[in-house]
Image: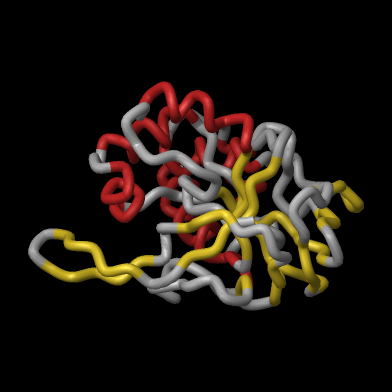
Amino acid sequence: MNLSSPRIVHWKGKEVETGIYKYPVQESIQLGTFGVAKDHVADLKVHGGIDKSCYFYSADHYEYWKSLYPDLDWNWGMLGENITVEGLEESKIHIGDVYEIGEAHIQISQPRQPCFKLGIKFGTQKILRDFINKGWPGCYARVIKEGKVEVGDKMSLIIRSKSSQSVQDIFKMLYSDDFERIKIENAVHDGNLAQSVRQQLLPKLERSAR
């Protein structure tokens, strides 16, 4: 369980507010339709909202990132996630899957796309390319049943989506032109995929039709 307070960082000569500096907490957190209670979201245009109510990242990926960036002050929430989950595999989680965690039910809506604020936190914008190349984006979810989540709660699949698109599939489509047309067509027409991501994929679908 990880929350953040607002922090001001400097980017290209300007002061920018961010909520990416999350820290682990032991008390329960409340997952709500529009976000996590007591968690700061700085830019509501690109973070938070129904399709990005909560961000999940795998604890299993941490050793890799620690080996790549050993000099950072590591703790859970380092990748900006609200909930760090053991055993989360982006290649096995599909868009539209519904999970129960604690009292809440969440539905997977999209992969995370890294921005410059992650680069600021890591001390180098190189992390963005590393993050994209590795293909471990974590999962954003919409909250379809609000509720509390405690440290140690299990994340259990309760409804498997009919979608054939995994979170990792969608992430690769966003950053590569190496894909089958039918896959991106299915993604664009998948009502469970966040609308903003579908809009990003549309130009690729149009180019593939030429």
